[in-house]
Image (cartoon, rainbow, N blue to C red; front, top):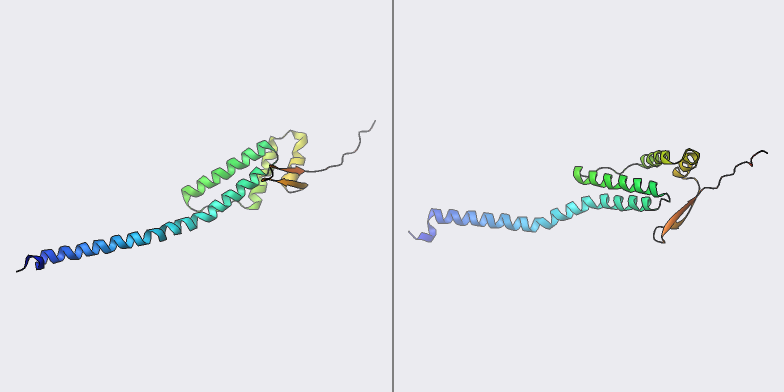
Length: 143
């Protein structure tokens, strides 16, 4: 009997071929798996960058800091749990209004109005800053 045709040698060749085929399949499929992971991560990254830009547009430094902290926490949660949904516009507005509680009492009402979108916005993040303005009329003090 030829040693290259022994049952053990043929079995080893089949196992080697099967392992080689499996390894080739893994190597060929790895880019597809990576692309799938990247595709799933892309919407979360886009939401993070969009929300971060919105935070950077805030005029008040404390509001901006709180917003950036919220966005970073949401991103971390999304990465640890998988794809977590982005906060709804209502949640973002509610958080912005809650941050107005840190303002002095006489400024809280104006802060809340601006958090809800009242007033005008000019400038851009790319241009170095966004200016939010809310013009209110107050009656002259009675003398």
